[in-house]
Image (cartoon, rainbow, N blue to C red; front, side):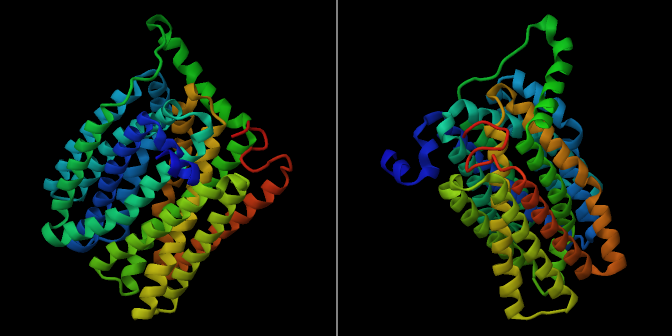
Length: 424
């Protein structure tokens, strides 16, 4: 492992046993998450024949807890034992995934998805905080890259497994498999060392608001982090809009239920490729430049897909170009955005504040796009599916250009160092 770590920078964190444990649990649960997404698509859009409004409601249910509970969850995560938080959340999500097996209607699906997302609101900042305790600062960028690789690799493997599970046993079989992945993840994560801090009981009520305020102030005072969060907020709004219409646009282009899984796999291929590139060589470039380039790439490919829908293209050539090549490029762009954003957040935040800063920024990033599904549905009804999708894609390009222009005004930013942050 040491020889590989010397040659491949992205593998360096795996030299540390605690991080290997954390990474192993993340890999398993991430694969399960994508089994869940494909199963929900198959259940709602194909089996129940519901439309964009239903899928938009599911996306809102996935996001709403982050917006409402994020800052509060982050403060508690910084105080609690992060290992325990992750294990409890995984076991709770396993039970809720099993609940989807017997969900009779959309309302019950939304309740279960919302509850599962509430536990994820605590799990994510605990996982991010644990990274700071399991690797030294020199391996921080590579550790974030491996975390993204886990998520992106799941986008590659999970949809294929999800599609296979749907074909073999239907969407509910995929929900059962997802529950099993959460149980396995909990077992792996239980081997992590205990971390976290706890305020004296007499000070907790008073200091809670102080801790919450400190996390918000840290974001506002770090120029690079503030730019990253602002760019991610707008980009997330547009991404959520296209997510609402994405599966329906592909369906309109002739993508079958089974090919939706393959298309998502192509997206995962792009994610993995983009993550590997940034993890290995990203330290040579300014993180905001990486973010800007990824945003423009995503927007361009979304606009191409929407244009294909406007022109009512179909056939095998269009499937190859839009559903596979286009999706791979979109995945690569997403990966560069997430990797650069996560690196800036981790690098410019003290270890004892990572939980609340992660959760607070996630709350803003998740909260603003809550109206995106409704807007996407309304514009699709008024302008047409393809026109709305293209508009959102072009707006993403504008966001990327705006971040690039703001970045050029910060001459002190250098590769691996934010304009007001500290060195990597």
